[in-house]
Length: 338
Image (cartoon, rainbow, N blue to C red; front, top):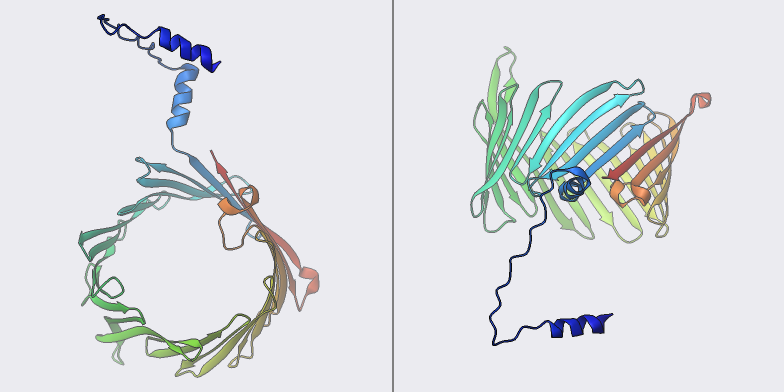
């Protein structure tokens, strides 16, 4: 078939010494609708993603419909819930983009606006505003000696005191802010408060110190290829606990947590079957409950990456004090791309 087409083109070549005026091609007739117009609209419209979740414990469906708009510069999302009777509740509408996002609660008729953009190289402006309460927050973030070091100055709107100053660096962050402290005469007194998080490498582990509201939490995490050991203590309450994790292979892992202050403990065993199946079983002494669950689809992943874009979890709960009241529950999450 290719050779006759090539010969036809050679025969139709014009004489270079002749002058030929070519007529303009006829334009196709305009279409005002019908199947052809509908097919063009279907190809040009943005893809719609529909996600439905169901939890048998609450017997409530959660739906989310989203699509990209404005040439994929923004994302429009509608979410709502319905129960077994078909009653709709908690409708939410959101429009998000790189610099501006708007979340609107249809029932409450309230909107939350978030804005973030670069004022100059290394200087960022952020703002949050709730329309109904007329409250929000303004913040400026500046890079110091590179993006690893940041200084943030933020203030509530309307302002109720000095702005909060936060210094972020590779080993943690430190913030200074005002807070109210009640005195014996029931008069509020504003004082300066210092909060912070520090992390550092000690031996073969990471030590973390978190100071907030006059309480210090110390945590040490030692981890190698097979074992993880995490002791922690809170001061001044002296509450101590530790966590122990042991990996027996690429598919099996056992975790144990014990609180020395309350004598409560819990344990969890995990077994992976490939990437999309996970079995878990555990016991919690605080609520005296044993449980087992099976995940179909990656537990921490999205429905998009699961087989058939669907995640399912089956869970069996067995109370220690009343085995006859054991319950079998399940959760399902399904995504459709339209």
